[in-house]
Length: 250
Image 1 (cartoon, rainbow, N blue to C red):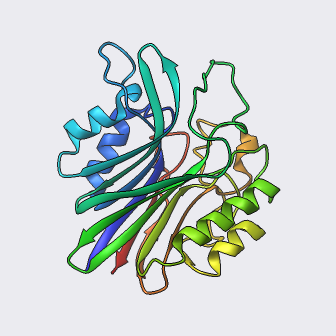
Image 2 (image 1 turned 90 degrees about the vertical axis):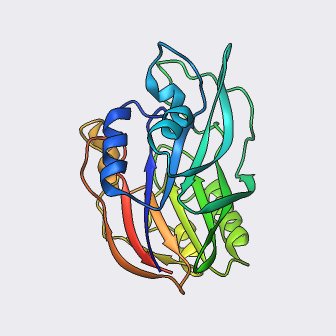
């Protein structure tokens, strides 16, 4: 069975929502991993605040699983977190934080340090004709560089532990670090990296300062019994990150 998978950090829930929707509809994936999704239900506000509602309206063929990592608005309460969409039946299996856990984290316009914000891995399972596939969605530990650190090594250890018993799994997301690190190397001992070290960056540099062009932070991994048929990172202006796309044989 062939399936198409996309991972994308949405950028504040989808600052470029119309472009995101156009891209996803055109690519027509079976599974979508999203980071920075918002669960607002508000009228007359930027559409990115209402990620889940808009996706439910415009991407009707998909089932949604949302794992909130934080809430950044109290009145009304708006949560932000990890969103996994699947054309297959999907069930929630859990959420594990790498450091600080769910709480109130206001996001002022001038904020430029997210190192204290929650980061986590979510797990859900898609039921397909080829059997169950564990889906792991990651928003990793933020830092001023993409190098190893104590908390990032802990993050990789948690990821390896979570995926250890999976027979078939896809791991994807914004890891907030570079692939040529010990932390990612630990993951690659157990999983195949779809893109390896072939990408120069996964940031949309038209939306980011040049300092972010040092390396890719978005990644995708699969268990070694899943074959990668095709993969690409299209340079599309839909977020401050670039999407990763892969066609897999399960």
